[in-house]
Length: 91
Image 1 (cartoon, helix red, strand yellow):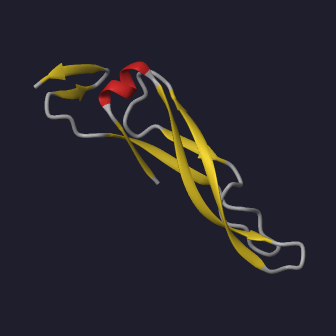
Image 2 (cartoon, one colour):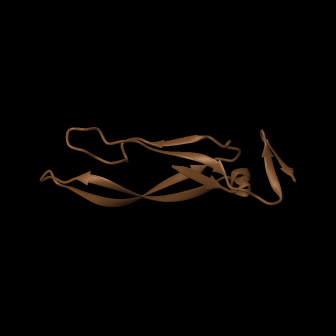
């Protein structure tokens, strides 16, 4: 999943909460959809493409290990600034 973060938030760091829906196996063997909120602590200076993995937080299946959920940091477009490597430039 792409996670778009503003350059301001990348510069300072921030906390993002992402709501996901996943299938969960019930004790009787049936499955149901469940919503869950995952918290991502974005660290100052993270680069676009940084991956954050939540192990075993994805869909569950019978006799299967639950899938991982992966978020990828993307730069949210900014009309005044752009990132060049580790620097932020006025454009």
